[in-house]
Image (cartoon, rainbow, N blue to C red; front, side):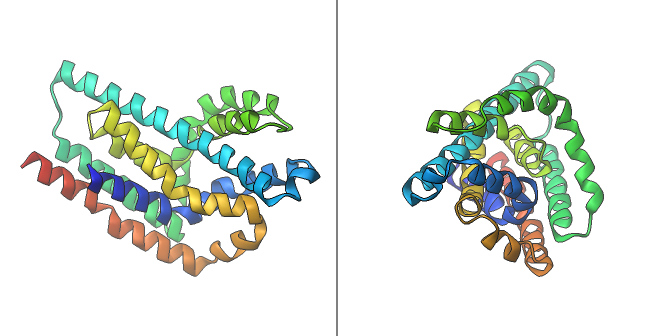
Amino acid sequence: MPAEWTVAFLLGLLSSTHCLGMCGGIAGALTFSLSPEVRRQPRWLMAFNLAYNLGRITSYMVAGVLVAASAGWLMSLVGTPDRLVMGSLGMLFLMAVGLHIAGWFPRFSRIESLGRPLWRRLEPLGRRLLPVRRLTQAWGFGLVWGWLPCGLVYSALLYGMTTESALRGGLFMLFFGLGTLPMLFTVGVMASRVAATLRHPAIRRLAGLAIIALAPVPLLITQWEVS
């Protein structure tokens, strides 16, 4: 399992340029929506941004538990599909994410439309928590934020399905979320000063290529477990 966690963390870390495109604007807007008193005190500014992100990661964990548990239940009913097949599908999906981040597969963004019906129901809940004045509100907004349609999150969840365990699925998504934390936390605290640099096409290409190189690793882990 530690190898799974490492892969999940690296996946989240390497995908930070995509996270900036999807969530960087949200992180910056949330920072500027805080009261001037909070923004002037670094420790409170960091506390609120941490609360936002912990809420987001909590939602990733919940999704990982639900997806992995559902997959395990279905497999017990209909017979277990070959985990290698599932792993191969996840690898191809993740390679598509890498190509998308690098700017070579823009149509991949269409897959994010799968989560839009759920997002339309959840988004109003997030609006009710604005303006954020307390840390509990920030965490609650993060919970909603975590369900924002994102192809990268979907690819991580697909890998989580292959674990066939609610606990392992939740832990996989926990470490994936922790991988995304450094960048989004930094952007939330420093706003656009970091985001502009990391959106540079060359950096996005390097990140995309790194994700493509990482894509086969979970499949190799699955092969080792099966054998």
